[in-house]
Image (cartoon, rainbow, N blue to C red; front, side, top):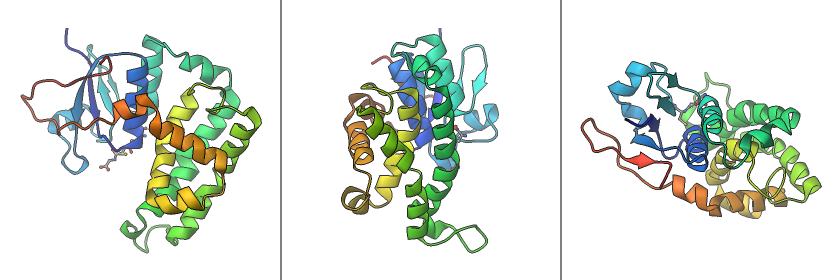
Length: 223
Ligand SMILES: N[C@@H](CCC(=O)N[C@@H](CS)C(=O)NCC(=O)O)C(=O)O
């Protein structure tokens, strides 16, 4: 039977969190790497909003939101009890996820891609957006400090860690020197570095050639 098809883009933080869940849940999918400025017609036909990740399931169901793909993965094979990490901490989970998917992401984009915005957009200087995004990291510093743990809730990555860390990785990349030398939250810094060294993260970042029709499938998730 054909495996589900995941349209993905290696450096997209939404696609990263979906790939991490698929990998941790050991679900095999066909990975189709896309180029954002040249999204294949096959993907647009099933998901006209044309954002990655998109997962096409066997029975034709389409999941076109990363959080839906993550929930689908843990409903299939929740090997690392990611559902429990979400349910046991649901209030803080929802609060932090919403901050990072909204306010943090807003400032992150304007920090990282400052020159792409023009005066018609709501945009200030790079540093202002960096500092506005930084305000959101305090809650994580506090959580890591209070729990004295490697990850947000204990010594294993939780649903929330995985959902937000790809975005904080991007925040670091916008100015690595500043993040490594001047960013004031030391627990957050160690936590981001731990993520970058995490085997699972490195496995989902393996490079693949952009997909073309008639290519041999690339399988992802089990190996
Ligand atoms: N809410 C969506 C957001 C996905 C998203 O915005 N992905 C970006 C890439 S990181 C995208 O595909 N943008 C379309 C484009 O840049 O053309 C999700 O969680 O999956």
